Image (cartoon, rainbow over the protein chains, first blue to last red):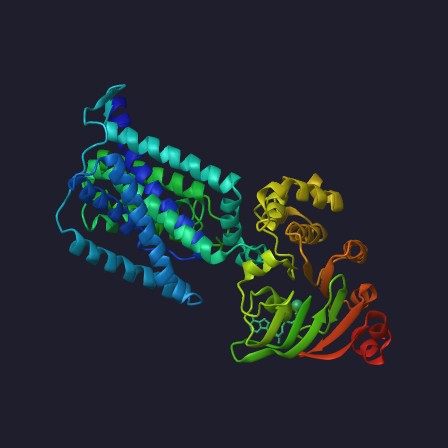
Length: 291
Length: 233
Ligand SMILES: Nc1ncnc2c1ncn2[C@@H]1O[C@H](COP(=O)(O)OP(=O)(O)O)[C@@H](O)[C@H]1O
Ligand SMILES: [Mg+2]
């Protein structure tokens, strides 16, 4: 009984950590630009697919992974520079539509550069399950949890302790005042897209050995990350992490105790419920418009 | 130090600045007064580069900066305390100040911070507090302190006394006088024409995007037109 619950919780925590990383990407870009970047899931896909193809071409994982992350970050910066930046001053709805267009384009490009097949990435350190109080956990899950924890701590340090991080927060809160402080807000925007893309890519790489990856893996993961971000309160870093973990656990418990058929519906239910009853989420500020 | 020539600026098709000429010399305190909607804020925004100039020129220290990016102008030393303070509410007082020094070398930060705290001791007591929880007067001090962190060569002040009780207006103006004493070059905009012109070496009067009067601060205070329109006499 308890072992089974623990098993579900561990599974939920693992996938929740992935959602949290994707949600953090949504939060960072939303803070910088008020845009909900619906191409966020594509960064997840690029991370996984690029790592797979680099690894298949003979590159060892410790080399393939950073290259894939950097490639995704570069795509993020390009997206900002050539799709979002030229539309500066357009309405937020227009910008959101641009990101949807970008996501379709990126998926199309992925089928050209790579293919439409499912791909597996070898686990980072074997696939021998580890016993834990009657439940088991895959070594890859430990990687997911460990790396996510590390990233959350790193982001906490970056936004809480460095002047560049604080300049990003300041820009989110009041871009005019940030400019008057000498912050280059265009640079902040680019940095936000690059950082979000890197986070998404890392999520995609970490999860690839567990769930496989493909050209369209970003659609569902992007949606889940979005649900997590909404649940936590769009724009809140803490909210993104808590929202991700809660969504992962809710899905896992729902699949375990009710039916796995409804697993993916959980995200939709959460999006709708939050939008109806609690538009600013768990950690969001009062008005949904504000960052 | 600052030379503005036939400067124009538009909001869409509305022309807010209709060809301004003005100068600010090193060490001077120049005041700009004018009614609500005259274009004072627009002028300061255009000087800071957060509002585009549609024509004319802005020359600072001999360099044409009419179309330069806002952050580069801050690096040159043109620093603005915007209308309505615009502090970073969720961030602490100290973070607000440190962000003011964003363009300065990192190792100067601590010394600069102490200098600002000695000028505004109330900020030091509240250094860990979120800026949004400060009173209006304290937020104005914070906005000024934040600008000073950038070591301005030309300080632009937009309505520093707006919405403050008379005692606080006096306090803010005492700081402005102290800055002037320390040879900071200041361009001061205020609807409170009496306060602004009293501390100014020179002044300009702006009316619907045009300069209509210029002269020494005291001279303008005694001007009949100014008295009637802006001093309520
Ligand atoms: N963001 C804006 N969009 C359109 N018009 C504006 C905007 N800001 C100011 N204006 C107009 O420009 C003129 C000058 O405004 P402003 O510079 O704020 O004056 P002041 O600071 O002297 O009160 C006014 O007529 C005002 O209505
Ligand atoms: Mg104004």
